[in-house]
Length: 299
Image 1 (cartoon, rainbow, N blue to C red):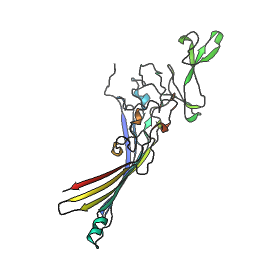
Image 2: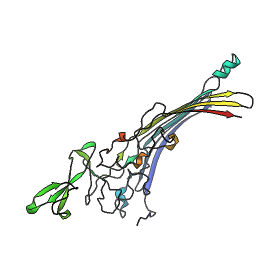
Image 3: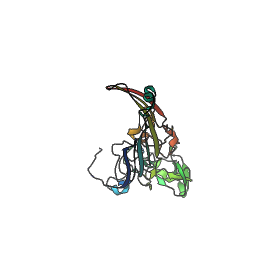
């Protein structure tokens, strides 16, 4: 049985700065920066993100899951501008038609990455949650490196041996005395059945992102009633790859969009420390530049 009781706690602290220049002399500019910190003990119960915990480690003690919220975006900066190119006041009509009515606009956003859990791909607390539990921290291990574990098997006379989990201990599971990391130099170690995870919830920050979008517009007056608008848009103008889990929909244009074509937070490999692609953000597409040409008749 899965239930969603109305319990939990969170707090949010933030500070923001905003710079706004209203349209004057053909220039409009606005920029803002927000520092924020969100702490809670539950965010992802509907499993909208595979790289974050779906259920608490111990539903009777939510304090064990208190940490950075999945919604915690520590830094975010955004700006937008409009620049109306000066019009030619003197000259032939055809020349004025070509040179007047141009606008250059754009937006820029940069933000910190999404916090994620380091997941063991194992049900260490035996609560039947297939999403898996968190891992074990080895403070002296190499960053961004994870490892699975092998069985430590108890033998006769107090002699122990090591066996892979796939093979199992001689004599069956009753002879499992513990676990040993396959790579002792790894920072993150799998917590198998019966092992207590030591990593906090959402303790790892995934890569952030930054995207430039720009547009060039030409407004041509055809008559008192009719005008024609030409527009060239570029999304991810500089073709900068963003290997991130962040998916700000306002900057996404669907398939081939600037951030990517899939929701990277649904990855089953990124935060799974037994995966060969563990914490390898290059497994994501990173997005690509998108260009659009538009023509609009206005009357």
